[in-house]
Image (cartoon, rainbow, N blue to C red; front, side, top):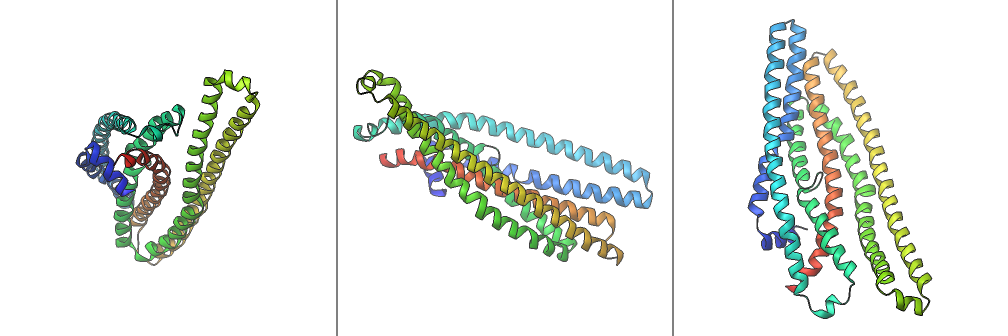
Length: 320
């Protein structure tokens, strides 16, 4: 996929702008997690010490910090929206021009509906891959978030970090094995089958007289019905895989919290931690968990939408 993206940006330009926007947006989720963790730690410590004035100062300070982060994030996503609007126009024009340069034999291999599916559906999937929610941008953001919060979590307690990794790593492996990979296969099947269904429907409308002459209406309608049912079946299987992923997340994330509570209570009773520091550690654990889930969901969407990128490459790759 990296080579495919390089070829697209090599033709369209804007790679440096895209990377710069990603770089500016990377710290936002991580900084928000750190702000919330430090806020809860200082709140509980001031409450424990009976410092009411310090409590109000803490709330005001972290409120201003969240406001500044919100404005920064909104400004960057506004820039992303402008970049996406320009990119989709360039992408469609580039793909259409590549189609026009193909040999006539290659163009006649597919119907008009099949080419329109590639010009619209595949371009939309590629745009979602580059700028959509829970796609390539959030994959980068999640990686930064997990790495930073893991380091901060380990600085508080290596034991708690080891407990968290013992739960998180099997979760990611099972989700990758039973959710992400099957969904990529099902998405490709749905896209290919939808193309066939479009061909059957277009043939039924455009060649109605010929079809009626040879009494082939029932055959084409049966083929269209079979293709449509295959698309529905593939999408239902994708939803089942998503549900399995949500079940794994619910079971393992709750189980991880129970283990951390048990170890945390013991460390508080022995004086190794106070309640405020344990709360900060749990916030970092939440950041790791949410970052991991974002990474897995984004990775699944990236693999799914990369199908559109590969199908587009079949067009302009032939030209090259």
